[in-house]
Image (cartoon, rainbow, N blue to C red; front, side, top):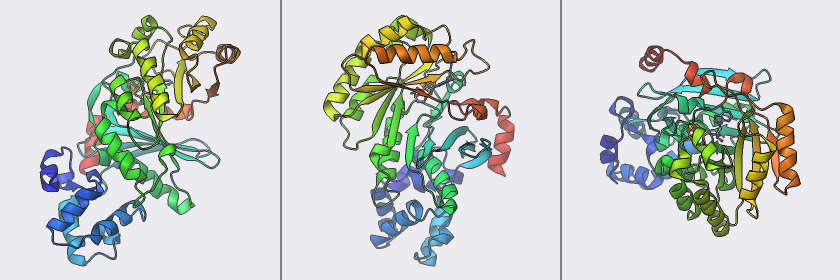
Length: 370
Ligand code: SAH
Ligand code: SF4
């Protein structure tokens, strides 16, 4: 598509400028060709953005001055504005609240493990699914992010890690929003991040988490990049699932498990199930038995995460004893599971929790316009 037409179509572009990170490599080529520039300029620009991680055009030293000036005037490179960064005491979890160019806000989290630096990305402002225990769900839905807004969350942390000699090694789509309801932008971001001409991240280091959007999982199983799939399963029966979110109506367990089985057959890759444990709601041994039956014979792994309670919801995290009993029961029934630490709980790093504390939209607007 003509990049200038794209500019007109993109909302949220900074001061009417073309958002460069929203463009695919062929679109950057097209843009440069239209300016009468040689084809190799696209490689140079791609390299500056995704390998050298420059944050302005002045840093693109091998581009002629007139091109740098033109890009500066007509395009925008960095559009996310960090409003607030919170670090855990040892700095191993860092959570950033960003303002977008239309003053909406999203959050992203960087988690440092032994050799892994994982960024948890948002794909939407809010989420249309409204799971009642989730801070993002409680905040309603405003809009999808563009590919560039998704990519820039990674670039922000990549730039932050570079002076420490690190890089973003893994990406999980477990921040705000439902990635499979913003499929095109999510996939474009993944293609860009894995492009060997650019950031060159291994597709196997990327995990898409979905609440269970069946058509999205079908589409994902036909893609040729080996990204990983995580499915959030809130309960092992549809009645209970319906009380914990509206997805059960869209995709009953029967359909959801069928598409997961077909995903495993097609791709040969296992599925991870994320199961939030809510005290007295979905954490009894009976639920463990139901879950084990559901997953029988499926190449999968279960991550058990004690609920990170939000102020607005009536639910509590399962006690250690109940988590461990649930975990033991699954093991006895032959289902592999891991008890995950809710990383950064002390940072309100649960999905959408920092943002929900950013009360003043006006304050956010001031920061964007400043
Ligand atoms: N929409 C996608 C991805 C974002 S949510 C999805 O639902 O999978 C990422 C994960 O956070 C999901 O597994 C969800 O179940 C979990 N989650 C949301 N709110 C939570 C909370 N309060 N405590 C624990 N996990 C939560
Ligand atoms: Fe949306 Fe996932 Fe939160 Fe449900 S858990 S409201 S699908 S972000």
